[in-house]
Image (cartoon, rainbow, N blue to C red):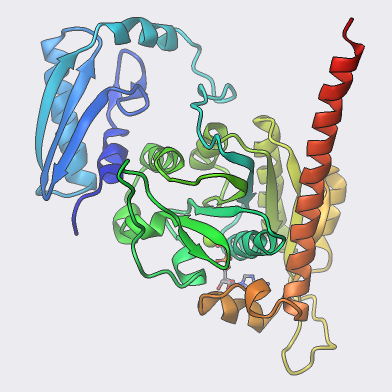
Length: 378
Ligand SMILES: Nc1ncnc2c1ncn2[C@@H]1O[C@H](COP(=O)(O)OP(=O)(O)O)[C@@H](O)[C@H]1O
Ligand SMILES: [Mg+2]
């Protein structure tokens, strides 16, 4: 498999410039990256001349690329001295490192009106199922919609949308999303070998996600749905701090173990001041395909609904556990596309319309607030 630029940058994001306490990619010190088969060349722009440090960083870059990307990679690193970087970085370096304060936001996703993160405390609760169906349902309303699958350890978009091809790259070296059912799709799974990604550490994942944000030709979108990796650890926290999020949807099953983790999800978004649009109860009850009038509350009853009440966040609705939902996802057509009028799709369609209404209200409030501000000015 040929080496991709984002893999190299992700590996270099693991090398820390000790003076600034940040990695080389975040500091913007990697320039002119060229890859030809196993040959990887780039310039490492250091703010000042320091041969010992330069040699140490060169060694660490080589080790990181060989460890995480390809052990046969041949690196050709040129050291450049860029004095103008020094003031810029000294400004950054003097900041108090803090988990709470978000890093400086680059102008990412400027053509996107709303970025919606779909998160869950636990894996396997149906986060990707909800994200995929939400995206398709929003596209059905005529909105321009993108879906970014950031779950590098277990990407779902390739299967759920039956994507086997690789995305095209524009002449400006931007990645073109693949379109299915009106949704513009990008998945870590399109580009990165999942087996290789299993050994990626947190900083590599977040740097790859950041790059996806900047190097994808999203164009103008009304909604970009972000399928986050499960959990509420450092990876998720960094992603939600990097991306200009409009709001978050938390998915949970009714079980206590899932609810405990969903609560952590709500807390994470509160911490970074991202509004929680609401909680979805997935697998709310089981409906056998041959006895559609029956409901079995196998994971408990109304757990996520009650959690939403307790936390005073909106309840967005419930999705039953139905074979048709799993089957349609596994065969590449989310149920709201495959059978939009089915009882299986109904809950998902309602959730999408609640999300859309909430965002419409937010937009209206914002625009009327700015109008009032104009009228009361002398
Ligand atoms: N409501 C549901 N009914 C039936 N199967 C479901 C439902 N929600 C999710 N699944 C199935 O459960 C598995 C895990 O769901 P997924 O969306 O991949 O979870 P996550 O992204 O949280 O790990 C998938 O096989 C999916 O098709
Ligand atoms: Mg998933």
